[in-house]
Image 1: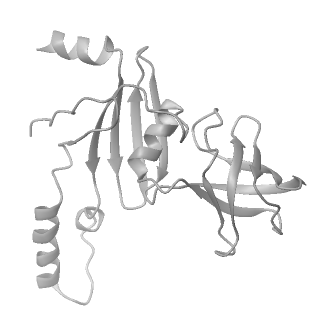
Image 2 (image 1 turned 90 degrees about the vertical axis):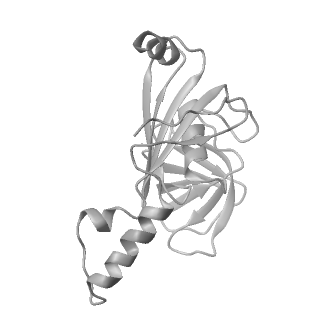
Length: 202
């Protein structure tokens, strides 16, 4: 059994990706086909956050980010200025290596200003794109993905209380326990080019 697991994870030609989706952040760890490990963290709303530091030219800005990737894969993502929800644009290029962001329009933004970019995909898919450096117009490489969740458990672990009383929290516990899988088990997920993941034993 151990020999099979070793061959499956360390001798596989497929990406192995494990994802934990929380209420605020989604953490992802990957094992590349070469046996190297990678890790990224994204917002569970399926977006990445950064900061515009200065305007360099029309539609061209210097940005600050910690996205955990050095490849420019963000063409076609939507840009949102957090200071004004009405200020949007489309990303032409966002290069984490050089810190240069190019948009399809010049925006009247003060500097610095926080922003978010998103492709409208769920957080696990965004995390998988970062790990495998897969842009929107390309197919994912062969991969196996396993997804777990800790949503709804933080309040229970911290034993938070409110004025609604113990009976209310007992109802929350029963509802959460029914809806959410065990955090030690992974939900099988299929993506293009990936075979079904297995469910770990409790």
